[in-house]
Length: 187
Length: 119
Image (tube, rainbow over all chains, first blue to last red; front, side, top):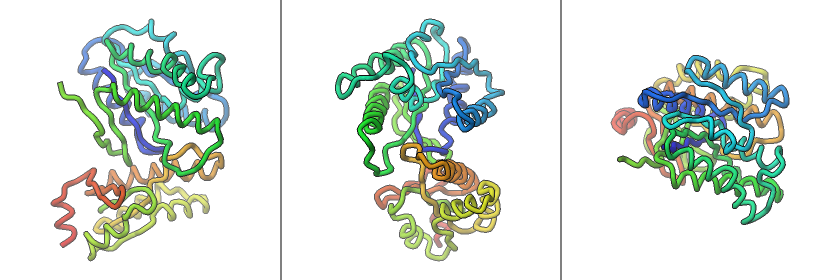
């Protein structure tokens, strides 16, 4: 199962996603509840941010695994029935584009193909027998014209969101802490 | 309290005027958040008073968090804190209306709550 949760900055999407993952895990009655943390602690602000998230989830039963890139390398340690919260896609993509060798370096269509291989396909594969809750970010509406490199980031994040959204069982947008349903496939 | 949120220029103020002409309105609450931050205040605490004062009224605020993370530290903080304030106001509100392209969608509460408030 794949659940995609999006929203703006400060919208409460993370808290909603955590609670959603906990609910799925409890219903599942098996497996382990994982939290894939993608933010690299590099400066005071990012460390504060990480601290806020740790505080928010501390009593929810998550086992935290750092996953700055190469999500496919982690896939083996998860078992069917596990619930895995990926927090968040916007960091994971930025890390793959700017922090690690070999991630997503090419341009245009070739870059998209890399995004498919490095992020989209591994996540979809994991979703076949595990519960994947993905937090992503609406960063597309400030009306600014960005430099080529930043535009490339926006393009790939939009592409990943769209691909995952199409395949997801549920898509939610969190607005001011209120979950607004975008898509839900009822079985 | 009725909270109306949305991006800039989406018809929030007009919507309040048409649907709830008799209720007191605190428009552009996000600018209040900005002012408080500039004066080193705590906008999340201030929002407690605002929600109380307008418990029978309307608060209108912009959504600011739908772009890339700004380079400027103050802009970054403003955007994030404004989101948290909106989350708090939405939690306190009886009704939350979100505006896009002049169209309001009730994302919390019921239409009936709105109707009785408008009368």
